[in-house]
Image 1 (cartoon, rainbow, N blue to C red):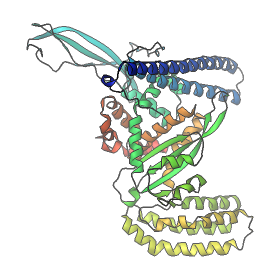
Image 2 (image 1 turned 90 degrees about the vertical axis):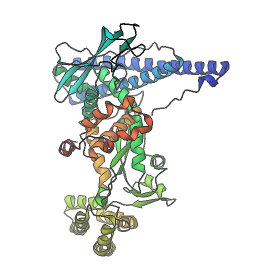
Image 3 (image 1 turned 180 degrees about the vertical axis):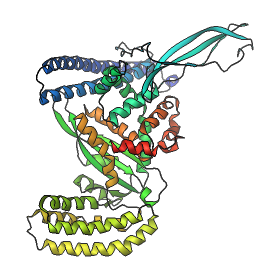
Length: 532
């Protein structure tokens, strides 16, 4: 979680208050530096373990050994990313006290002379000296280089800023240096976008990306990539907050969660964290509001987390039967709309396992409800409500009677009885979609949003820490929202990273996907989603 520090008005502080402020900032810097030293020590230890395990790989390899190496690679990646974020925080605190930090600077990538280069010359916009109006003459130039990635290849962009001096008064004129997403960083916005999408959309951990880039002739250490991910995730926090505000500003929300194995600090074992997803998507009810998804990480599955996430939300919550959601409905400001897909799934699993004729009948009856939903998808709420009342409600009344009768005819301890009781115990919430044309018959919108996480979890094995889980939630929010709106997430992140460093915080909504001038890449988005 990023803490925003507001510098007090120094002109209003007396000498004692100024001294207290400096002492406080100095203590904060010392604490952060101690944490960095601790991280650095653990990083060195992990590198030693990795070297030992790799030596053991030669000869006969074991699957267990491969998994150990992958786990250590990912833990090391997370520590290096967290270290980069903490380093930025120390720098921000140091700027308050104007005291330079003595922490170690990250290694910058070497920009090989073999890489193609594009020269951009930034000429001053002034044609005459701003002081005296004299003629400007060439004095020299400043040159800086940024490693950038365009589709399918790397290139180096050389920024050249000529220096001009006035022939009359010697005033020096020069164009300001172009801003970079990461201050003094050697990565361009396109490369940063590519690294983020490869990690959080295409599920390539940083150490694997480093190996891929090396094959392309570019040496980018994992620690360098980790620095970039940490810096960019902190930079994009205001945009994730804007997505959260948009998601919660609706009357109907989809919610779900998924377990995420997370390394427990100190013992190298894993615990189970959670990623919660909240989806706003009213396009099936002909609503023109932009869809969006907000992911939030928590270290456990206690019900206090969704209560905190949704404390400002009022309306319908489409979710599964998780007990942690139940307290949300106590006050009446949030109403439950249950998911028919969960009901159908229980009967479907029984039918596949045992060829149950009762389960087959239940599936057919539920399929008739879904056929109506397919027909009315994209129609206005009033029209959907009318069709459901005339066609779906009689089917549901008949289904309810059939379920109650069937329950009396099967063993109370049977699996089919359990599936029937699951449906009947949630019947009121399952009928909720008949009351409002904006509601959906199921919670598939949230389940679709979690597919990328499920695939990433399979490739990653786990998150490196709670902080890594929070970082993943933020990036999943940006990438998932871009995809929901039909944008190629890499193109969208490139657009944002080209601008966000200089963008006014009070106009951050201008960088939300649906407010950008980018053309939706529906085919590209669907192609990516098919592989997610």
